Image 1 (cartoon, rainbow, N blue to C red):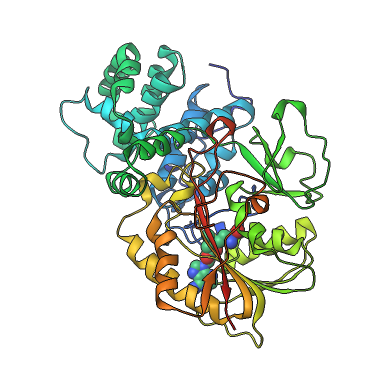
Image 2: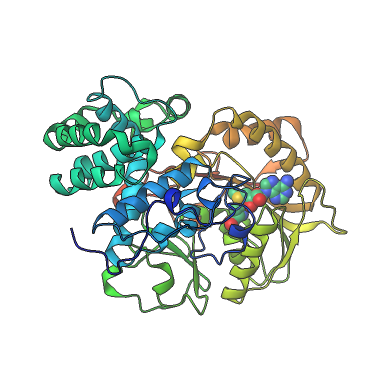
Length: 492
Ligand SMILES: C[S@@+](CC[C@H](N)C(=O)[O-])C[C@H]1O[C@@H](n2cnc3c(N)ncnc32)[C@H](O)[C@@H]1O
């Protein structure tokens, strides 16, 4: 293994025990990336203190051996996702990760992400070498075994490096100190035959049972399998251009190409280093996430309400049309990010920290976009932690909230005005069925089908003229997140 660029004490956050509240201070952290899409627990992560934040550091610890720091950071990233932070947020707040540089950083990120994407398979492989199942509280032990199996089964890491570093990692935590023998034995067995064992695990193992059942019911078992397969891959980086006709000199190695109405797709993770970041010529936003604002058809001078707007991917799209945009979101920290995004891109919108359900502006709008809170199951490829943190029991509450928000959004549209309802969900109850129920209960609203040219001829339209994207579609070209969007007219 290549030694880290800088040797410095970076043990597990558990051992380091420096003081930091997980809520509060994180909210003020500068954002490293400006990703669109849900960050459900973005800043509203677990309340209270993280265990690693409780005590001031007592003494400096010696540096970790080369190759252990990056794996240790991967363990810390997994631990943070286990506490309810999205992987995106964990990448920003995890100090052991942020102390890494260059290829070590990339390796730690890939290791955490692969482990989350393939966790079901990894657990099945590991279980074959354990005499008895691990206890639920043995999370560190489970994570050490998982990252080791991920390296051996999916990442082509040399057997000795993976097994040796696993044992080194076990020495860093009280919980795992006594398991060096087990970790060593299991790692060696997986090095010998883990790859073949992993290939034999059924595809559905990497999707929680409840989600698999819902996907199979909605799309059939074959397509559920294709979606599950798409979730296994790292998605490309998609950037939405502030000015869709802009020409930017992208570095050759990122393989930038145009796709959809305003997206440039590439394979980079160094968002801030790309040309145009400082000038705000673009923002990161999945191709599918860019479609709802496109189909709203906002025009210069119109009044547009962007409901549930933060962190503002769609607000920026709407503002770039010259419309008078009012961006409403109830989350203080997320509206801060929305303002930062507007500032960076030089786009103008009025940002309001309000509960959409209680907001009563003096006038109705020409157009309203409602990007409703949802299960976010459409963004699993960008947020693989959702596989293991989303709960089926959350869905009915979300469906009820979306219905209330739809009715409220219709109150805020002028007669004859347009409403686009969008969710980044794969579940029909949050999308297609939500709209069917709306059209059933109200006779003052009708669907306005989207045409192919409005979505740059992407294969995303249903026969009713709604947008329905799924992660496995256009897989050969990098795929896209799962979104549903429907355009409606309020009759006068
Ligand atoms: C899917 S995200 C929005 C993404 C955003 N439209 C974008 O393109 O960047 C959903 C948002 O709904 C907001 N939200 C949830 N309930 C709300 C409510 N009652 N009032 C206002 N905003 C709400 C959340 O804070 C979250 O920012």
